[in-house]
Length: 461
Image 1 (spheres, helix red, strand yellow):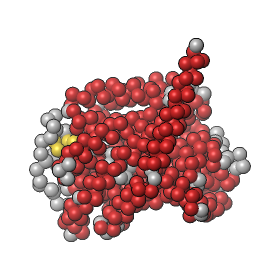
Image 2: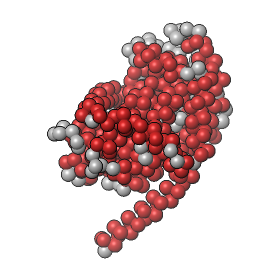
Image 3: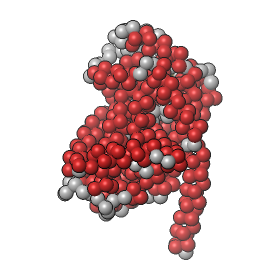
């Protein structure tokens, strides 16, 4: 009887995965790819390539703005956004992308990160400009408020909030717990229920502190985990230095050879790039809205550096590491998918597997925490503060569920949710491009970054 129920469960899961895969392929077809990359390019051009202000953005990390508008520091808001962005997608997801679209997907993922810096700049700017102060004294903002207050289209704001609340469970919860459980099982034979129990308890404990508690944990975890992971990648590349240039040539050849192969690589790479840095998705803007900053453009610059770290640096490093490993080791192939990163790091004597496991688990914990805040703010927009507590209970329960789910289903679910979330956000960025240019011209191009924006922040819900 138990076997029959288990078989029925897996058959249902396979059928659902198949249908979601078909919807994902439709959703991530040429129209959305053109809209996403077109928006990245359009904003890059009209804002005069804001990527060139990267060094200025990095300097702003360490400048405290003395203003009472905001809940956390600009650096902490970036760490919350990066915590949500840097997760399983940067490690396991790159291997999945290579399996689905070939090594060429890495190029399109990287390009999405570079161009996405302009989009994240725009999202951060609009998040500050259109945020509101809640009845509890905290700030709320993001694309739902931009759509409502900037475009006067509350119905689109509601749609975005609904998609965000749903997407949070895919990109920020189920996939993350699943990746951690898989890695811990393969590395140390820890059963999924054991990972689920510990991860669920940690999530519940930190979420009790709200955004300030989440920000404190993320501000500690994110820099440490990123440095450790980058050092591990650099060590592999040093050991496999002879294969770096062939790997880069292989990636570029796969990215531009064969019409069908290029389409597959582009679709997979762009989808994975968005999954990684969320530029165009709008989620990171929710964290930007909580920042204490003297004007919208300062926060926009800080926000723009997010895709640089999580995609231009971390995803690119992961992709090159995996490709050099495929070339260097006959026992590793593109078809290994979700296990590709594990196999590559296993070539580091003694420390490879523990380092990857530590990096992945810390990435997962921080991503779950960051996205819990995004989903919470979406629910708060839809129904007020009374929905926050029930949401937190469901979120914690979903962490446990994600650890014991089938990975194919949750990854496909996340891709679908991403696409639905991106649509209303991209519409708002294009519609309000005049506001973006006006604010950028005043504060950035006319060298007024140190001025305070004295505009009133209205009371929200």
